[in-house]
Image 1 (cartoon, one colour):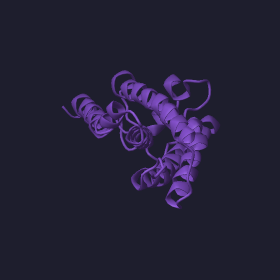
Image 2 (cartoon, rainbow, N blue to C red):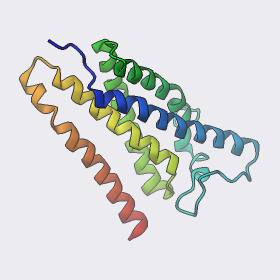
Image 3 (cartoon, rainbow, N blue to C red):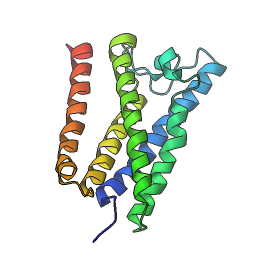
Image 4 (cartoon, rainbow, N blue to C red):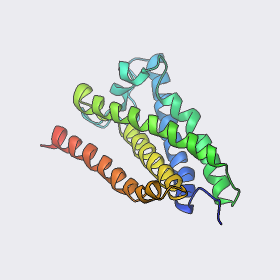
Length: 185
């Protein structure tokens, strides 16, 4: 029996998604530092009045825990890259590691969902780099959960694994629709 938890798809998502998420988090962190040094600094992704990272990184929501949220991504995405690369290399990563990833990325999914709501309806500004981080966090959670459920000995849990794809798509449809309704219509 194959005890490998991570599918090749999850290995690639952790590797590539981790790099993309880290890069976006890094740019947000640099922008935050530059804005702290020079309040008139214009962020690299300030495109217009709706798409403006610089306006987001100065809000209370952007430092929910008392430090820039982007530091969470800068510190956590490299761990996911490492685990993804190890999985792709055929090295068996312990099940408990994927359980930890599922729990933490589940909490992160709740957090980025709250941040999306805040961005869309409270702040009424979108941060392109933040959206990229959201877009990496959610599938990492659902795909990790899917792979864990597929390896479950419980047939009911195993059968629930198919729902994770629908939940991922549903999350993107809800957030995409909210953005469309708030900023386009």
